[in-house]
Length: 218
Length: 199
Image 1 (cartoon, chains in turn blue, green):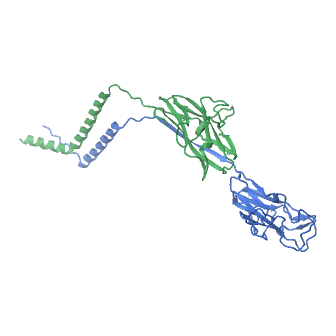
Image 2: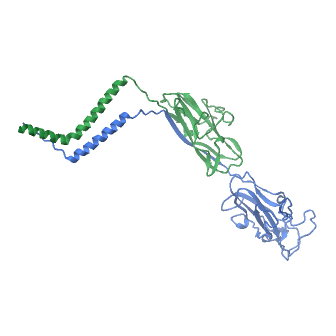
Image 3: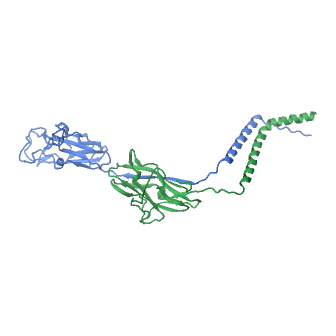
C-alpha cells in the first residue's frame, strides 16, 4: 500500500483561505445586487456671454457751455487784471439749489447710469490759453474736484491742480479714478502773470471717461 | 489496528490542513445551489434593461456662445442659432439604442455669472421644435420661449414621452441697460430619462 502525505505550508493555507473567502464574498454580493439599468442620460455644456463695456459721462449745463473767467452777461466788464491770482470761473459759486448749502459750483461731470464698468475720468487742454501769439501757461489754469460733496468749501478753493496738454497716467489729469457712478464737482481758477498782454485768451478742455486702467485717454 | 490508527491520524492531519478549502467549497456549493433554485423559480422570465441615450450636435456640445453683446439689448442670438442657411446648429438627438419612451429636460446650474454679477435665468430663454427652419424654432424670446431654471421642471421639457427624433433648439439672452461688463458663464444640462421616472 502506497501512502501519500500531502504537506502544505500553514502560511500558504491561510493565504488561500483568505483569498477564497474574499472571492466568495464578492460573488455573493454580485449575485445579490439589484439589476442596474441605464434609464437616463445626462450631458452638460457651458453657456457664455461677453457683455461689452459701455462708458458714458455727461457734463453739467454750465460746464458744457465752457469755462468763462469773464462776466458772460456783460463781456465788456473786464474782471481780470494782470498780476491777479485765483480768479474764479464764472460759475464756481453760483449754485443755489442746495437747501442746506449755497454757493455750490455749477460745474460737474456725471457718470451716467449706463456705464457698466469702473472708469477713470481724465482731463487735458489742447494748448495754453492763447490770444494770437500771446499765451497764459497751462499751469496758471487750475482746478479741483470732489465727489458727492458740493458746497461752499467743496471742491476746495483755490484749486491746486494745473492742466496738462496730454492725457495719461498722471494724477494731475484724473477727475475720477476707478469709479462707476456719481457726480464729480469741479472749480476752476486762473492766475494772470504780471506781464500778461491784454487780450481775449482761449483754449479747449477735454474730459475723457475710459475703462479703468493704468493709462487714461481717449 | 496500527493501520487504522495511521489512517485516522492521516485523516486528522489532512482535515487540519485542508479544512479551509472544505469550508470554501461548502460555501460555494451553497451559493451554486441557491442560484439553481433561484433560476428555476423565475422560469423563463426575461428582464430587458432600459436603455436611454441622447446626444448633442457638435455646435451644442461646444457650448452656447452668445459672443459680444451690448447692454440694453433683448433677444440676443446664440451664435449657433442661425447658420449660413438660417438653420439652427443646436439639436438633441435620441439615439437609436433608446428602448423606452423618454423625456428630455434642460436646466442650468445657476444664473449666468461674472464674479458677483449675474444675468438672471429669466433672461436666458430657449425654444425647441422638431422642425429646423428659418422661423422654427422660434427665437424671439416671446411667450412661447422658456426661461431656464436651476432645477428640472415641467416647463423646461424639450421632448416628452418619445422614443426617437431630433429636437432643434434656439437660445436667446436679454441684457439689461445696467448690466455690468464682463464675461458671464454657467453650465447647462440636458437629461434624457425614462418617462416613467421623469426628470
